[in-house]
Length: 73
Image (tube, rainbow, N blue to C red; front, side):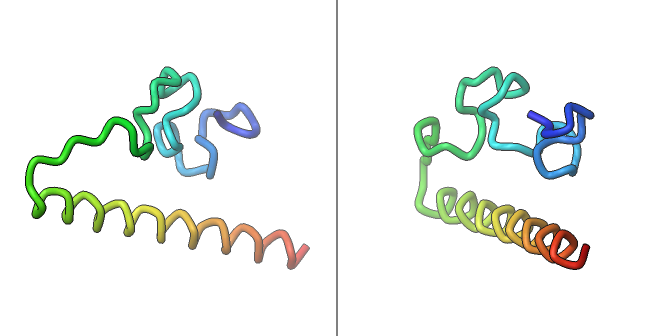
């Protein structure tokens, strides 16, 4: 859910960028949760996990940038 209810998503990056736990994900855990994963090969699992690391690193960077903005005010 958008914290400001403006449709920009939880981090301000647009809809569909959250964890999939809210109404946009129908609360069905379609986000990064571990419950719905099905891997067929070690290579596929490795690729998915690498992508997830990259996504999480980008999200962490955005959080740190926002914290810096708030600190500068």
